[in-house]
Amino acid sequence: MKKIFLTVLLCSSFCTVFSQELTIPAQTQYLADNPFLLSPSYAGIGDNARVRLNGLFQWVGVEDAPMNQSLSADFRIADRTGVGAVFYNDKNGNTRQYGAKFSFAQHLILDEDSEQYLSLGLSFNLNQFKIEIEKFSNTLDSSIDGNRFTQNYNLDVGFLYRVKSYFAAFNASNILPKQIDQAIKLEPNLLVNYQFYSGFNIRNGKSNLELEPSFLYQYFQSDKRSTTDLNLKVKYHNYEDYYWVGITTRFLNDQSVTPVTVGPMLGLRTNNFYFGYSYQINTNELLPYNSGTHMVSLGFDFLQGLSNCPCTQNRIVY
Image (cartoon, rainbow, N blue to C red; front, side):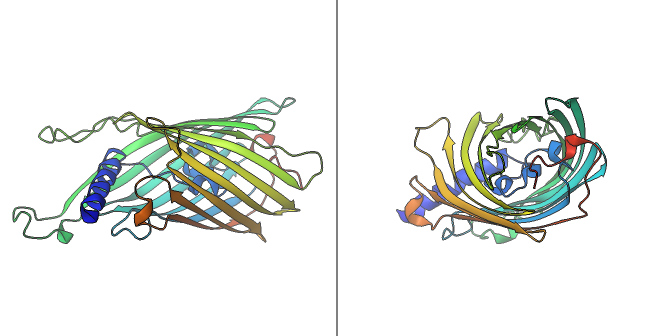
């Protein structure tokens, strides 16, 4: 019974990854001071060039459970222009996708006196989706052989609005329709995914403490699913260094109000080095069969230089 249950869960996760083709799974990586993974509009928005290496290990203890690695970098090339790239590898059972996103962003001043800024971003995506036939048992079907993979390209568009300490980012992933094999009726051709990320920073005067509540809403057009993340981070600033702890929880919007995952987060930035970690535990039927989901983020900030345009500066004043 246990094997049957795990098989059903893994098959369900296979369908999820298949319908989210060309999309980097958004778990907690964006909370590790790397919202650029969510939207190209964040490219080059800080005072540094940023490099982040993320490792996500889901459902530890379940054989062939999903895992994801990504390497991202973004930096400013002019006062109001930023560029960036993301390289990723995502594995789920016998399915695998890997590729890259190349992003461009333009940062605009709406009103300098009231500190209103608008950032527009565009990404070009290259992706390869592969079924690892070599790992199948020959007893299943002798006709299943060869290298089963497909290559795709697509676009993401996004914008980011900021006013004082409030931010709101909207991103549409995979906006181009996909050409599919008409003989495969189950293959989705609507791959558009939408993400809305919003929150604000609360800091009292010269206090070293800062609160950052935020939420992320994701909608997957192919199967009409949606999720909501509720997050809270507490930062302690020490000049250019900072330390933070937080908590995040995820809800499946078409199910009950009980969260599907919940867990703590922590991180630090010191001497331009960044480290982040988060742990999530499942609250559904998968709980007895795994030890949770782990995310580790390592990063480095370099080439610090203030822009002449306030629309690209970090709002935290040290």
